[in-house]
Image (cartoon, rainbow, N blue to C red; front, side, top):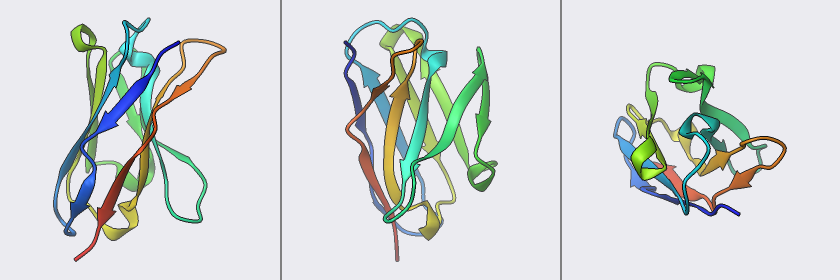
Length: 115
């Protein structure tokens, strides 16, 4: 079993920035199997940022150019740098890890973008 713990959410004004962190409770097979999803109120969970292949990130169209995913294998962690935040980015953000047929989710961290 792997526990994923997110941190870094909060309230920010439009145009602001936040950096989310996700730490795995033990060594993972590869941090490039980790990514970020989000779920807005009343909406479905959507993929936000992930690695298509080792070290090659990809993003949902709505966040391209504003969000950056990165990772640190030594810390079994991935990060999501979010810049130029918009009210429509308001959601619970979840860390996800899927080494194969299993998948693991964090508990989520709330991001609220509002003036």
